[in-house]
Image 1 (tube, helix red, strand yellow):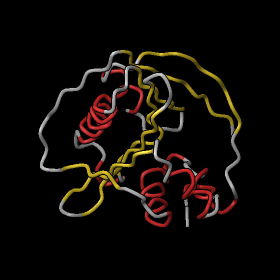
Image 2 (tube, rainbow, N blue to C red):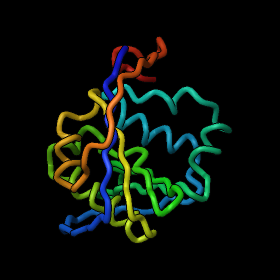
Image 3 (tube, helix red, strand yellow):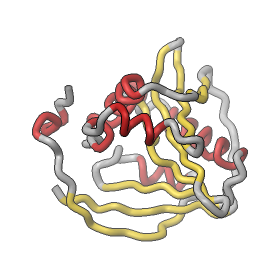
Length: 172
């Protein structure tokens, strides 16, 4: 499968807050099974498979680095989405993964969660924030990123292979 990927950047990011009766909590040293649960629930309709196919040890190395921060959005005491950010060099930060569980889309929570991610990165000193999206992401993802201030930076086409057990958005 070929995907069109695009990179977007915010320079000198700002954040504003809209109040929802929810919160996002930083998860320190998140364990691989819980991370996979979040990753699969958010990404199953968008062919997120890369982190489902690596070993627990490899995944732990990826998500438990000091530069990686994972925040889980909670609604009614249950996870409803998450974002993963990684601190780069020269005050750059990367929004690695971001999204909501399917039952929570369409309720205005995506822009709120994105703002939480931006605020977290600004609080950590980010002067530039990068995000990558592709044509398999949620239909409103690009619009949400642009409304938050992200500007186009680059584009490429790349081929990905969906392992047989994950084809057809039937994961697990």
